[in-house]
Amino acid sequence: MRKRASVLGLLALLVTGCPGQTVTPQPVHTPPPAKTADTKPSVPEAAPEPKEPPPESAPPRPFSTPKTTWIELKNGLRVVSLLDRAVPVAHLRLAVLAGMAVDGEKTGLSAVCARAVASSGAGSLDAVELRKRLEGLGASLSVDLNADRVVYGISVPAPRLAEAAEVLASVVGRPRLDPKEIERVQGALAERAAEKARSDGAWGALMMLHRDLFALPSEHHPYASFDATAEEIGQIKPADCKDYHRRNFVPKNMIAAVTGDVPADEVRKVAEKHLGGLAGKAAPAPSFTDPLPPESTKITLVDRPGSAQSEIVVGSLGPKESEPTFAGFVAAAEVLGGAITGRLAVDLRNKRGLVSRAFAETVPFANGPSAFYVYTKTNNDSTGEALTAVLDHLRALTQEAPSPREMETAARFLGGVRAVTTSRPGGRADELCDLGSRSLPDEALDERIATLRALAPEAAAKAFAEHVRPGHGVIVVSGDATSVGPLLQRFGEVKVVDPTRNFARTRTLPAATAPSRP
Image (cartoon, rainbow, N blue to C red; front, side):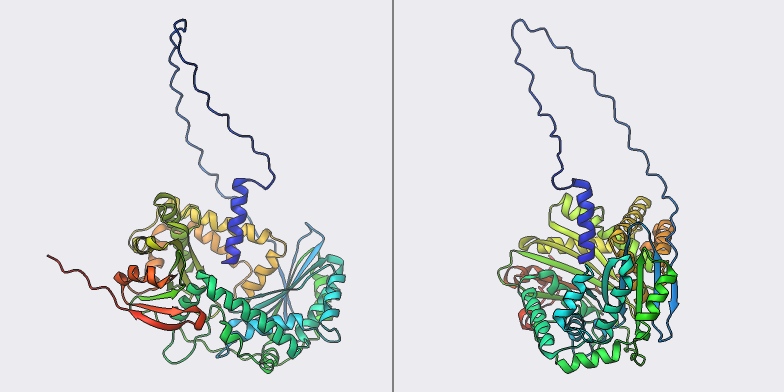
């Protein structure tokens, strides 16, 4: 959601103009002077000629992504490089293929440990000395965690790539993991989680969406945790972090990406010298069991007393990213939930004024089905009407193919979003790490965009209908249970949970009895 929000913000900025830009105001209409006795009758003006319709968009120009170069070091670490001479900067990323999915029963383990690795000092450098070393490089160390990987990143002037690689190898390979620093990180993350539980409705809705989508009868699915609660974070021990690092931070479980003004042969020399010394046995492979789609609709209400608005999430399991239907599913999801031109945004936000936000998201995972959901935000009294409209739009897309124009718009928008995302500093290096963590080739997204442009509308609707089945989804609403609960009962039984108590169930609202027909 954060990446998508930032991209949409940039697109809005391109439309509305930059801060400080001078905009010439439109002239104010001045009414004609009142008629007097000496005033001659005015001659009626000729009707303006009808405006010509805007020309059709030009066909997309052929584009090929610059070629990457892959090598594998003797220790098993894979390195990908991409030469870009536009700016004399090198972007170095080191991805460890161990995200939240390896937490097991200790939800929050990767979140605490991944950040403690970056902040507790490394090798002969304590935390203060490490910060000074990074400042000397004119850089900072970023940490990005998702379900399948944690990525450490540094961007430096191209001539200083070797120094950055030396620092990053030390941080990732030989972190101090001081218990006091682990406890500090733990406390900060627990405080953040507690605040989200109190005030972030979207966070609470997505927490329950993942729990319900990836529910298993007798075990915890690796993708069932969207994030960790404060209570879960508080149970992590310093020894857990050291074990997490020992098992997962090994070269055969890593990918390094270097993009920027550094030739491939220079990247090889730097990688062999500074990353080739990392060692460790092969990481254990996590076990994944595919969850089953819900047998009926699940409705959960995340209680936020006093909230004037509700946030609605309706989700289903989508296809795996490796399946041929994935591109069609993504296209259909964009037709429905594109943040600017999607059906939900045009209807619920622009026409009816029911919601302030409406979009759809398809989240791919490395080992399992994707997670699809629609998100809307509305006032409490409009919750039932907004949810009905969302369900109607979902049903309609499973029954009737989108128009060719909708398909074209979806493909263009998805291609544009990717172009904006990869144009950010280090964006291409981040993308290469993400693709590698999901075992996808470097050209996977180029091929997907090409597939979307050539896809028949009927294929998109069919892919969508295979996974989004009316009456077999997950509905989660974050809002005031007193105000919103009665509005949801007509959709079925409602489970009410408390986000400040680790999402414990507090009560169950029975489904409303259907009125008898005369």
